[in-house]
Image 1: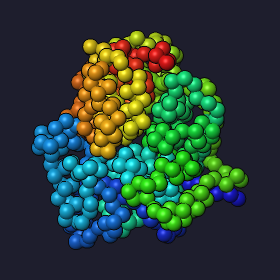
Image 2 (image 1 turned 60 degrees about the vertical axis):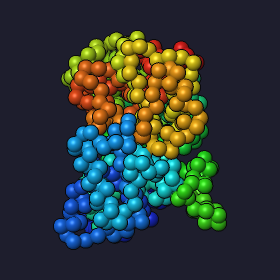
Image 3 (image 1 turned 180 degrees about the vertical axis):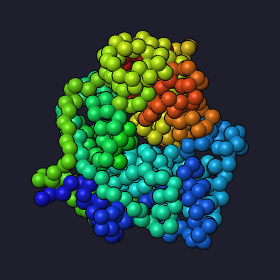
Length: 459
């Protein structure tokens, strides 16, 4: 029987299988940041051991940092302490840190790919659930807990039970105004926020193959939001062209050899999945969420479901929405373009192209936060910052920002935010904040009109 892409990568990294238990899996790259590492380093210190392979460990700051005045001391005491602790730990244990002021600093799941660290066939972990982003390259990438962070720092291996396998095919051509964020929100609305639990998902089909690498990253980033362990996409020419020439990519003959191997990383024709879905790309519209998990999504011109469900009623009470109503025309207070889901240069370009020559609505605060220092630099070179300024919007500095209420960029209680981030849980963007997940295009339309708007009206 043939093997899936997931089988090929996973099986090649199994060091040992424990009878009636988990497997010991070797990890190629371990990304770390300031939030989930302090206890892990303390554990190493107490046991008197070092980091096993520092060259396989990559550190950055992203979750807790401010996105304005990064040259000044961090105001929030807890955030400042966590960043200072990571700096101290990386120095003590000999790990290179892309800290504030470093030209390669940024959100962990943005800098890995843009530096060429992320490559097909790798196993990649990080103490962050959205590590699944790296699966867009044909890597097995997943988030881990703090105790597992310590495990990988100490041994470069992790104990894991092999997940089941799912394939989701999206076939055909996407409609006007539909981008990758809409694809993944559509899929999650179909199978629910728990429909992928216990599975590793391969995304396939012509609509997926036609996406850019940055669009593929958005898809895999949110595979975790359907409950999956991770998501991945088979590498192809688009992947190789994206990686070539980046700082940590193989060079010359080594690159050719790598591509020869990467080409073998595809699902065999006779491979079998435990579960499989197929969707028609033409059925996907611009999407928005109405509730408090990413599975509560609708096409922007549809209506909130009218059904008896205690969870739905609790979510609608929090959001102050009602069954059977349309979201189009609902006033909003904030727009956030950013997070590890949608803060890459293509996302900023999409947003800026729609905003160009227009003004943001007076009732809306708009935060545009690049995912890395490199993205910020490219945006300034391309004049995106000027387009935003003319619209009344500031281009901020890189960081996780308003994706989560861990830094200074919080949405106030009761306010509505159209957000390109990945989660709309109660209080995710700040205590009492109300989050509506959407694509960069839909976010741009909302910034212009001050309300939830069908972006197709602008196209």
